[in-house]
Image 1: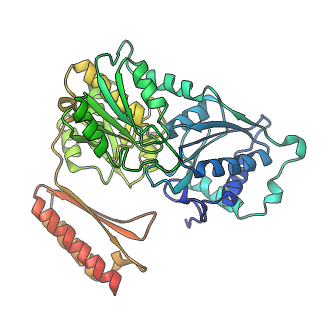
Image 2: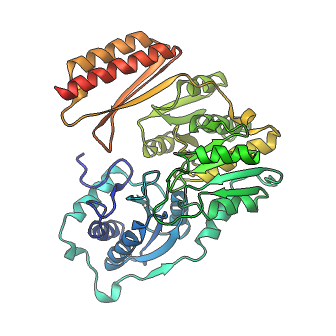
Image 3: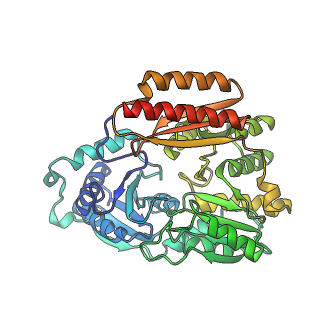
Length: 449
């Protein structure tokens, strides 16, 4: 399926540059509103955003598009992506929209769409919207007396905070824990610290002064150095780093060591398995999750199902096969008992629940397995299909033979840029490094030919 606007996670690009312009946002609102406008009830859409400067521009354009096709708009303001998904269901909306480019720099932005159940749209649904974007917009407009209204939801933050708090086991409090939270100057800058404080923790906040341009800038889950330093300085029990739209989380233990999504999934899966909450006998992760996670799960009688990279593929597999824990190494964790998409705060609360229940330190709780040496390198190319070159094919075949059963190899083109991603992992770091180097060299040669 050829995509004209949608990528692997909605529509994304540089603000004020195609396709991230007011004109396209207006048409997306009209097209998506038309696709989801069925039945005789009063139709409604929920719109949230992160803290990027361009969010004001795109929010207004979307609002205009949706109201012009007869949909009432509920504006949430800066809110995490999972909050938008949750409120789409709670407010019985026909559609949810999140304006965010997640962990990207501030000049980027994106449009993510959710169906009435809070799930990201299927490829087929996105194709319908794309076709309407490029069609004559006049046919989508409603009569003057059917134009929609726009309302700001003043209680949105409180509703999400209460939702997040209820995911914690009953009677469990965070009293006595000193928590540093880095909100990446993004969508969770108000709700995440407040939820932790209301649960009884001593909360130290960083990355909570957004100015429209500093989202993800030297802070958050993609740049946790400041969090590590603050945890050490204050001798905190734990550090929590969210990304720009708060659907990812990275943990820093009391020693200042970073804990990634693989370890967090292991913690949650083991805890839920022990209490009988885990379904389907395992979890879902992508091809990028460490082999150490797979081996650890096997050692406690659980399975690991792998999907292509992208949280949507993880969620689809979970829904189809009945799993309730899944996610990515990056910290994008989906706990379907509570959420329909990744939720950094809710994931962190599940880890904190394990810490409180066991009385152990974060480093003891979160060090579930020793990751295998894993090396990921990106090779940029101008055009063509380097992976089909005979030199690359030969290098890959040789790499597989060297690794055998003691490692994994993942080579894939990026879905968002002209880059080939080469990842290998195994028990012997020297072999892994050599394999990645050989394949990257072959890709470079093929790309230059």
